Image (cartoon, rainbow, N blue to C red; front, side):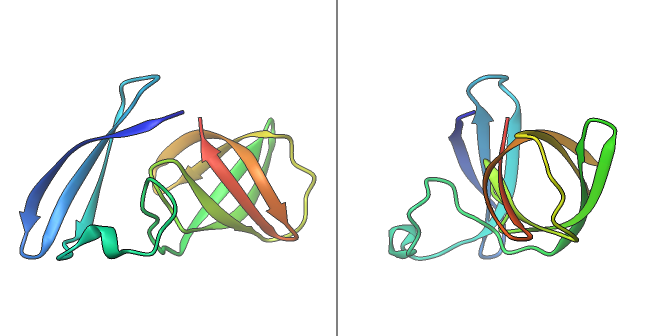
Length: 118
């Protein structure tokens, strides 16, 4: 899945609304970002900025579901902390904040799991 920046619109004092479009499904994903004088000065290698969050969620694999916490959320993926070390297939579903998002595992270190949205 590739997310492409569509537009940046001022939405409040010192904040901008960033809108991305999925190249596969044409879905729109929007995030509010604090405005900076020079965005290029941000030390970030990724194309899409990450947001530090701590959101309870559930990751499901077939009929099994596991509690987790979402961290470092972006338009293309997230980092999760699992409550245990379950065996998981590569393709999963993340359920958080009223959204159900198909995803796949990209990396894993102990209870930490990196996912990319499909």
